[in-house]
Length: 373
Image 1 (cartoon, rainbow, N blue to C red):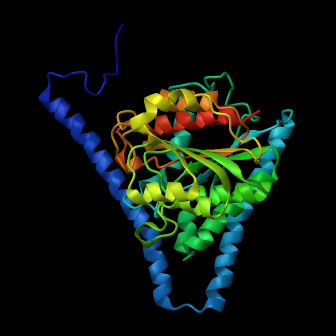
Image 2: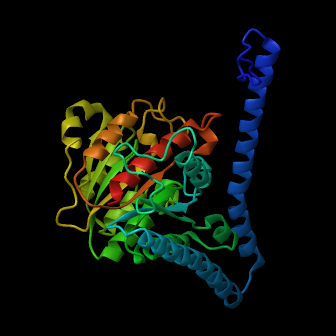
């Protein structure tokens, strides 16, 4: 049998071949990182330029409102279409629905999570796997997984729309998805700041509190990290002070300050740190949540995992969960999941073959299976 293709590193005895291949990969990664950084700064520069131009509010405000409405119209009409497709194949009690929120500027370190949704989607549908989840549901079944696309966050920022308004656009977009029963939001981040407007929208739409199961290396409970109330490190403080959650369980915590502990005590947060995980495992693998409230929300920060499983994150903290640890907790959970997110995957930090994108995609696939019914 003749072979016409060779693996990049097949000829390991050729220093020239090895160096050439290695340099090609490094060059590709460098270009990608530079492009992400350049685009990430674009929204900031556009906003600053608009402010510097001193455009009258009676001119700027109506124009911004039209841009926002155009964004919401796209989500609204796409959600209606996907609902019709679900109904056309027999309907469902709940259909997990992807909504991308490519926002990264509320990160305290790197903005790479703003560019993650397309890479996660690519991982979901990669030909390296198949469309069947571990429990046997087929993601190609429209009743299991729908997709309404991304909120155009960078375009909104280019128009000078501030964070307060962006948070409202995210909430309104989530509500538009929920308007189309049985669609339920499964959000692709983005940094963790997006969880606040998503949970707010679900709580307001369902007119009641939810229980939250939150996987993370960090508690994200700072009152106002680095002066930013919408920081990804403050999202759960906003959720708890808003009264949107009855219970907040945080699993995988291994980087926490005194403020994080004080805030947890203030809000009654249940924290399960990695240093006691072996003791807590049995309890966490037999959770029953959501009774007496409107349901359960799942938030998965990819850095909950040990970086050996997922190096493509902004904040690398050793000593984390294994992928199976998370999945065992999720798959054994008893409760009605009304929404969820997978956040903080950072393409800037990933391996050349986007390994962490595949990890994030696997989380999405299995969470979609758990949500749909």
